[in-house]
Length: 464
Image (cartoon, rainbow, N blue to C red; front, top):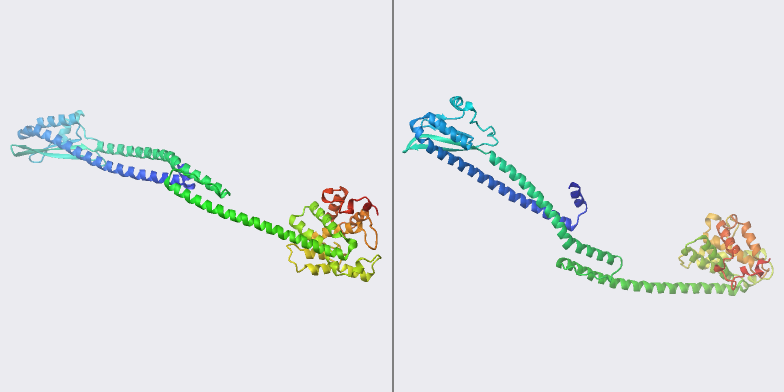
């Protein structure tokens, strides 16, 4: 029962609170009624006991009037002894007119005359705890006082009745409490807990996003008021949710439009660069496709891949500021001309750095000719200083550039390009990017490429 009470305290519910409240009320009412009954029954028992003692005293006064007048001690003793023995009186005393005891169980003469046979004894249980109820009756003979009779009855019966009353009260209270708990649980489960559980289940469904859910009435006015408020609230939330969803759809459309505009803008910029250098037309697009394939092979996030996509389409945008005759020169470049060409990465950075992309596009373009060992240009950065996207772009740019034709030389072929990145693996070129590129090209993962736009898989391009 203690564990049950602790469980109730730990997990409070309306039904349990009502059960506890009702149980406490029943206990208090039962205790109050039992106390009143106990007090009233005790008072009534005391009165009945005193009345009974007085009745015995009246009877004895009639029986002993004549012997007291005649001072017939033997008759007095015999009559008193017989009466006490017959009715089981706790104590009995007969006094004469002078107040001397004629019959008293404590008198030595009595002890010698009558008590020796053991028929009449004082009640050993008439202690201070049980006590005695005493009644005294004066004996008169034609208005002459001839003595008195004193009858005492023990309260043992009253004490026993009190004990029984307390025991019955406790049992009644325990029975009532257990009955109240059992009945209240059944009734509260049927009329309160179950309706509230249905309401709670409906609220949970609404909370999970089903705002069009309408809670049904449970036939309880007070709970139905709450249900009505919940339904109104759910309808308001549903309306707001619809407006929010519409707004999200609009934002998605706007985002897609912006993304499309960005893509078109970047493509236009890349196309502008190719107009300046017609011999490398399609270079940036092919590098873009290969770089994205390498990034996907390495498991880069969509966010990183999208940034790499923009950077790879614009990685040579700096060439727009270079002299066209250098870009289309059919012979090898001089050292001065090569230095000017190599400056295109920094020019591209200057063009893009003021555009607020959500990715480090300008820095990737700036680093796409850097090598892990610091032998690249224009800043001679080393491994930890170079963005991963720039490392991937470098590998894709080298493979495409060596595989494609240039004004100053024919295509070197895919084999030479792959030998180049193998020889520089881990020194100049990023190891994982090189491995991913080799896997893609060796396994001919055509789902990433198309022979229509990329010469990497054509039979001609594989020959040096």
